[in-house]
Each structure stands twice: as structure tokens, then as C-alpha cells.
Image 1 (cartoon, rainbow, N blue to C red):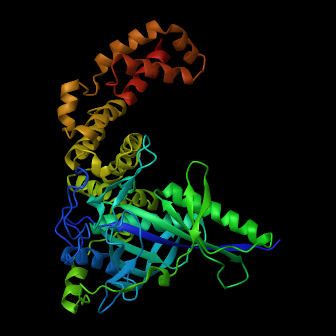
Image 2 (cartoon, helix red, strand yellow):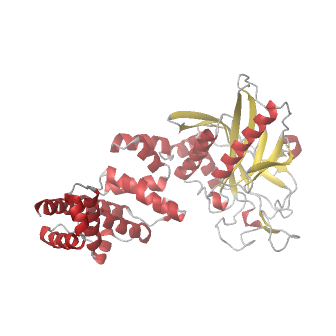
Image 3 (cartoon, one colour):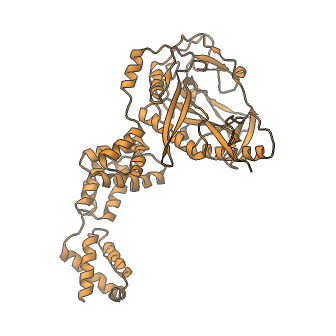
Length: 479
């Protein structure tokens, strides 16, 4: 049976986090009542004229330069015409023939090797309004125009990905860069980051690409990966059976985990692109580019390499820390306050991420301060508190913002390292659990762990576990 290869490309729509919209002065703040952040421009009133937001261009330039793109001079805004209830003007201002950036690339690790995906273009456009379909009223839809005119950056890749793992690596690299660059909050659950995937299948020994199928309605990483896997399997099966793949747009059905036909694929001619007559060509000069380039931050890839080099972390730990900028910032800030690097990394990549995942939060959502993290590490390293007590303290300060030392004092969690005090507790435990003590004397090592656990329980986790173990062994062997 012939082998088949997939070619996958992604279009990423990232909502930029500027204070105002792309072509008017309306605010972009989330959570406002419907249709309160609108004006004649974003509502498409006749005679209203768009004015380009310079901050949007600044943000877009950061991405263009970070992704190694050429800057078009000039770039041109165009009208992309189509009719839909969420588009008040019946056209969208976008860029096609002369986007802000083109011919770039993104590199990211996949299975221990670096993979490069070419960027075809990066362009600025305005978002459409938001349609809501009430469950109790099937006959009507509601439109919130607050989102109309929100600044979007579309990042279009070449079909250089061949597997779901490469797609996942690419999505993580794009989202990470947007966060590091400070241009988008990239929250998929709020629609700030959306994807459209294009998938084609071809015989592995042929260079010519197969017929491309686009999948829309992808609002999570899970949906993108599910749609890509399904389409690769569907198209491969169809080609093997001698069927013709239609160039079409399909939707992802999250419930049944399948794609379904939506419409035949539009072409640029269908959208009737023509230059936006109310906006001049955008010319970005050398001084503007130099200023933005100088302000670019260290991105995740280089930061990961530096953390390995400067703090002797493993590639794995450094990769986890740098996956989210807020997490890496917290780590380096704690180390600058005296926390040893490895213990600080262990707390963040272990317990902290567990707590965040449990609550479906990110590091930026938590209240853990670098000072409090450094204090926890110091208290454990100095044997002031035990491991169980440290977890109790950490679980509280991660979301309260309190000082670790204050919580330890308030809860009375200072570790017991006094031999006389521990000796009394150990005598009580042996008296209460004579069978376990006798089992240990007969060579059953697990009995010792049980007895240590009882000491920890009696002291509410305050006993020094190492010292408690040593004293227990000594007492049991002497009896």
C-alpha cells in the first residue's frame, strides 16, 4: 500500500491588546455591556472614515520582526467584500496584495529537533462583530458590535507542517511569542486567538501538493489537533479509494469529533478585493523599524537556552518555565531574591503548575510573589518547616499573595527538630502501634514508614522527617 504524507498550514488570528480599536477610538476593554463600545466608524455608518491606530502598527511590527519577516514598503489596506450579519459595512478592511510582513519563519522544537515553518504573510485587519444564538429563541440571533473593529493580526503559514505534533509545536510557539512580545493576551476561551487549518494529502514520493481543505471553527488547541488528525485520516482513505478530494471549507464538530462540509472554497476573486480608498498606503521607514527592533524582548527559545546556561537547569525544566512568560519572570525574580535555582524551579514546574491546572488558570492569574517563593525555598532548605508543611503554606500563598513566613507563624508550622520533643512523640507512637514496631524489628521495612507517618500526623506535619526517622530506628533497635 502506498505511503501518504500530509501538508498542513495554519492561519492564526490574534486579537491585539491595544486600548482602542484599529480604525476608531472606541475602547477594546473586555466585559463591557453589549453595543456600548461602538461609534459610527465601527458600526459602518455612511460617511464615517477610518483612521489607523498607530499602536496597532507598532504591535504588528513587533510580530513581523520577531518572525523574521520582510516589511512591505508600502503595505496596502484593502476591502474584502462579503455579506454576513456580523459585518456592518458588508466588507472587512484587511491586507492581501501588500501585507505588512511577508517571507518570514518560526523555529520551534519537536521531539528534540528544531523544526522551521515559513510564514507567508502577516497582515492587519479588523474583526467582525459577535453573533449570539439564544437557545430559547431559535428564530433570532443577537449581534454585539463591541467586537467590530477590534484589531486583528493574521499570521499565515506555508504548508510546512506534516504531523499533529508539529502543529502543536507551532501553535505553542506562536502563542508564546505573542505573550512575550506583549501584543496579545492570546486567551482562546475569550476568542483572542483563533485558528484555521488547511490540510492536504499526497503520495509520499510526490512533491506536488494535494487538494487543500480548510477547516474553520477551531477555538482550542484540542479542536485544531482533532480536526487535523481527522482530515489526514479522511483524505488518506479517500485518495486510497480513488476518490477526488474537493477543495472546500469544512467545520469541526467538537461533539462527534469529525469535520463536515460547510461550502466550496472561495477564491480572492470571490471576495472582490480592491484598495481601501479612505486609507493611504502605510509606509514604515527605517527609523520606525529600528526603534521597534530595539524594543524586542528576549523570546522563549533564547530564554530557554539562557536558563540552561546560567542556572544549570535541564532542558525540560527550562522549557516548562519559559512556555509562559509570567512563569519564567517569577522564577528569575525569585532567584534574584536569593532562592536557589533548582528548588525554585521544582516548586514552579511541580506544585505550582498542578495548582494552576486544577483551577484552569495561568501563572499570570495567580498571586504568588517572588519574595514569597524565595521564602518557601529558604524555609525548607533551612529545615525550618517540613515538606508537608511547605506544601500547606505554598498552596495558600500561591493565590493569597501573603508572605510565607507570616503564614508559617500564623499556623504554627515551624518544624520540630528538638530531639527531646520528638522523642516523647515517638514513644507515644510506638506504644499506640506495637504491632508495627514489632513488624519492623522482624525486618519489615515498610513498618518504619508507617510509624514515621504517624509521627508526622501527631505533629501535624511539623516533625523533621529525617530526624524522626533516625530517632525511630534508634529507639526500635534499642528496645
